[in-house]
Image (cartoon, rainbow, N blue to C red; front, side):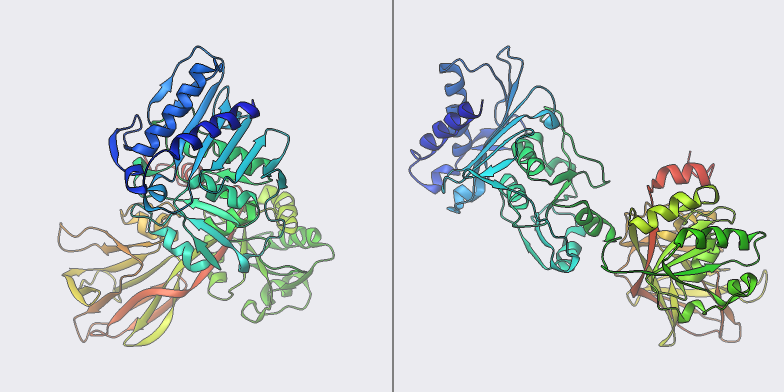
Amino acid sequence: MMNTLVAIADAVQNAVRLIPSASEMGEILCMGADGTPTSEIDKVAENAVLMYIESNHVPLNVLSEEIGFVDNGAKETLILDPIDGSRNAELGVPYYTVSLAVTDGTMNDVHTAYLRNIVTGDEYRAEKGKGAYLNGERIHVKNNYDPKEIVMMIYIGAHADPSSYEVVKRVKATRSYGCSSLEMCLVAQGSADGFLVNVKNYTHSIRVVDIAASALVLREAGGEIYDLDGNILDLPADLTVRSNFLAVSDVRVFDYIMRGETSHDTDGPHTYGIYANCNIEGVQNIARRVIACLKDEKYMIDTELAALLGTEGVPLKEMDVDTVIVLGGDGTLLRATHNTDAKILGINIGSVGFLTAVERDRIEEGMDRLLKGNYTVDRRGKIRVSCNGKILGDAINEAMIHTASVAKIRSFKVYIDDSIFTEVKADGFLMSTVTGSTSYSMSLGAPIMDPRVDNAWILVPMAAFRYSSRPIILPTTAKVTIEPTMPNKDCLLIIDGQNEIRIPGGSRIEMTLSPKYGRLISMDFDFYQRVRNKLPGAVG
């Protein structure tokens, strides 16, 4: 089969060379079966493939970007992108391929793949279980993961999701070449750590014809392709199905790009801290179970818990540790985020425990995964709260400004980016992060937000004396200013339900994106399953 694919590529290359100029290559002839324009180079290349298959009686059906599905009555199908990188060809950029993959099912059933750069002649080959090759030499993805040295191929065209530009800022270097198959192969040959395609409009995301061949090359080189939820990507032989994806050399690259960091960001020995809600009955026994799991690992115990255990302790705020193990519920975990910048593993011995990663009956399993680094770290944005120019703290859940007297309404002015948004009488206003959307914000009738929506806040009026006052979703780039307008009527500012600060009337409370963030360890986190299990009735 490989020899057949090589011969097909020869036919394409010879046909394309007959097109007189780059401008003629890009001339639009019609609309393809996938709904995108077909240029002359696309049609010439596709016709060369179809003619070769017909004249040589090759037993393959064809699924192509331009013509769609051609049923030749065969058992297997050639997934074809006649020219990947047509615009490069039109511009005279020597970076476009013919991409050929043979399957008897879906993309993940492809057993033979061949790609050729039409201009340079460089060729990539892969057969399932036999490795990947560039110009006859075996290739392999990078074998050294270093989050400080990540190089990414990233689609940053007109349809790119804004979050892609945030990734650009966080990695060492990025490139965008306009040819998905070759960009995938750069990951396969160890020239890059990953290739991200994340578009905001589904109709512009990737189809099976774009990556079927390069997917096998990458996998045979030791890499993998995931959808953006972290599932191994498969695509049917169907031009109507599309997907965003992240192809990587190492799963830790996926964790870093999609979740902010991985459990392996710091090499060498770790030091652990243990912090607990000491008002929970039996907390000493839970702590002893955790300590037993740590074995010879270095650890510190918070002062209050240490007193219960009859040993010496260190206040959490003074601990120099890599990871803090928190025993309690969500409130305990939130207190911990105010006293440490370390990663936090929550063990739920409280009530709901929505933010925790490990339940009471799975402590030993959770600790084993922690010590082995078998987890991910979610970076959670914070709201920085200031009053009259003085920073009062950061909220990972929510910041609330509320009347200081029970059942006494106040007047508030609200500004967004210094522009007046509303003036209303209410009990107060609450600003929630995505993390806090399943907490107080939800109880006030605001929407729940998936934690992957990491660039939005919710501003929620509390018992507003105006029926039209409703929660509003804001970008995290916004500055929100709330001004209690009654000079002699104090309010309370409450941050994450932990810090309560009296605010004089007439003050200006500003809320902006904090440069700090929380780092919450998660294990097999399924947000929607967690909503169903821990917040029954929260959704219909």
